[in-house]
Length: 92
Image (cartoon, rainbow, N blue to C red; front, side, top):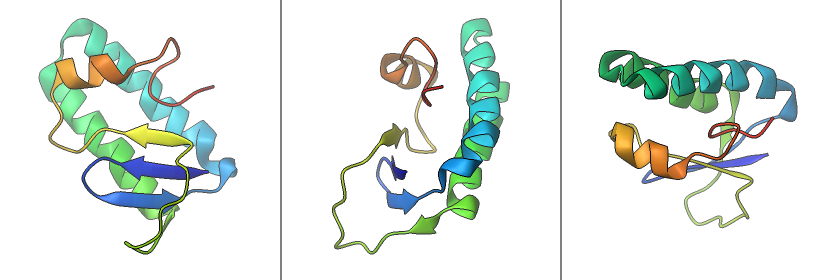
């Protein structure tokens, strides 16, 4: 799956890592619902770090269709809320 981190670029992540990423996404949803800014910030960074470490960055001049778009590390609670689907940022 191609993942775009807004403001950074694209990363190719093997589908076998979706379970791990979904766990972080679930945690992020709980923190968003509680309005836990500190927890949200830590989990968002953990999610983005996991995508970066588990995936392979695509060249800057590559424009592949993204299967998933994640917010930038500085996104606010409200900005992330606007990006959410029924099952979080990551489907599944």
